[in-house]
Image (spheres, rainbow, N blue to C red):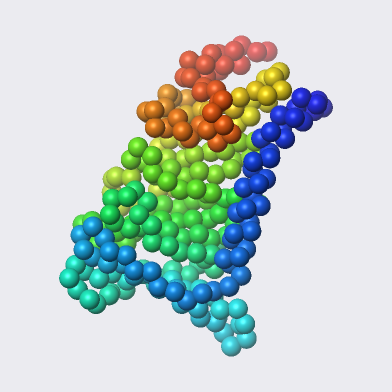
Length: 258
């Protein structure tokens, strides 16, 4: 049975999440209700240009709501002609994309293509990132997931989103490496921030845990550097950082229980 202290603790964690859920749902509803033709052109660090074109095409004669179609084209340095590079129209669930943008996610002067698709019951929405391979100049599928925020921290792509009513997760992959897809199966680092429901304190701090994959399991590790600690502040700066020593002690205690 949940006591009054548990109720207060749950409300503390749920309030900011419900606010972000409502804001996210409202923003995507406004964007997804209509298709607006537009173009976005950016100049990259090497002088090449990318052009994103949004087309509004009806699926058939009876379709009264045009479906957006997104086309990315590339112009080489000093060339005024754009060549087709990427065409997009649906997300991983074969639903129409809610938005596509050219974003310089790591601020290196070269732009990625970010898509946003169908949203779930919370702030997380399907998303994909496409990058240009420096060797070939062609776009490849760099990342796929479901998230509320995407950023770069210490040379790693970090996907952030709600994991449950009282927990948030960050997933991280190195930005460098071969042109291959980054997804949950090859994640390098996971950071979990959640309410300490086992605590007797009414206002117990969040627990922030860094983990790396160890075979089929996850092993608690220390943060790779100070820059990563900002990810623990989802619910404020009064979090508790779980150390590898704490995790090992908890596992040992659990193993001794009858």
